[in-house]
Length: 487
Image (cartoon, rainbow, N blue to C red; front, side, top):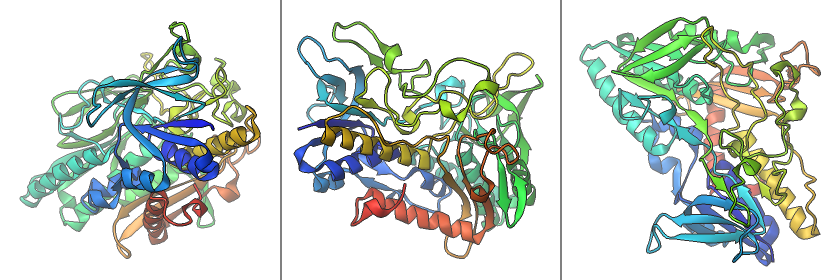
């Protein structure tokens, strides 16, 4: 009997544990270790953050689902990694600390034959002084509790606007190297929509601030899209949407501190400036969780498992070289740690080999560019690849990973919707192949295959976002035939 331990019940961890449980069956033990008792469908935090959804619509308890599926769930957080075991434990193990119940605070070893690190990112608000949500007029939509607070504050702001007060709203990147601009982009569109719905849009100045070189970069170096039969760059698409909604923008900006309800930033050309606000939602930088690793003799071997940013090393090429020399072949295919073949890290937990958007520094030396995103479809697809490989390894008694899924040849879809309901909403939907642009293969279309890199703008995209919400909630709850729904 093989014992597979999965860390983290987010998109990648929950996907991995669900498929492993389905494919391996009761002849093997599949365990989820996570400090979270609930699952949240993160993309819909945007609607929660503007009061159009309630927590119950996107959050549900994991216990009954795992109980029915016969997946053991340990409510604990990982403390340290011990891939070689120690003098008392021959197998590799994770040291965990229980977060609830009678065992709260107790530490315990959880051994494994295979380990999947799906812990995702640490929301590194502390990397930007003053960025902590609920201070300095700041909110967040990174978690459902954050999003609930965001709506509470936005609702208060709307009431002030109804009384005739003019306000300033700032949304975007809260750090010079932050990623996940897509979530901020969707949130700013929803704020605009809601203010129009409440008939107070004329009382607000809405500004986008980002570390992107051009609008629509999103950490993937933007792209060229086929939009209604015409070729548009992501820059042109982004500017069209913001101009249409009277949203101002500041780009090439690295926010370095928040103080007295004001964001202080530097631009690539070295200009120091600031932007005050009454309501701000600025995405933090992401990092690993700071795990330590030790060999069987107790010596620290953290660098064998983790990159300096705290994310786990996988089968990527981490050789340092100029940006122009990196290629799509540098990106991982199996998400398998090179030092320990029984350890995997799908989704945001893996360390990207390099930036996708061109790294740039200001004239003063500050790095200002978005880090590579690995959320959404890449998290789910890479988790499925990992689950398939572990299943084959267990069944065929091999340590060779044959299933592959690189972001260098993987396609992805992204939908940013504003509004809610069947007939009131607008969605910007984009598909791109590959996620990591291949400039040698597709030199004339931004490194992507144009026939599969498509953008649309309208009600249909909004319908798609609604459909995806209900479809993926259904899948996450492991309802009948859930596995037929693609990642």
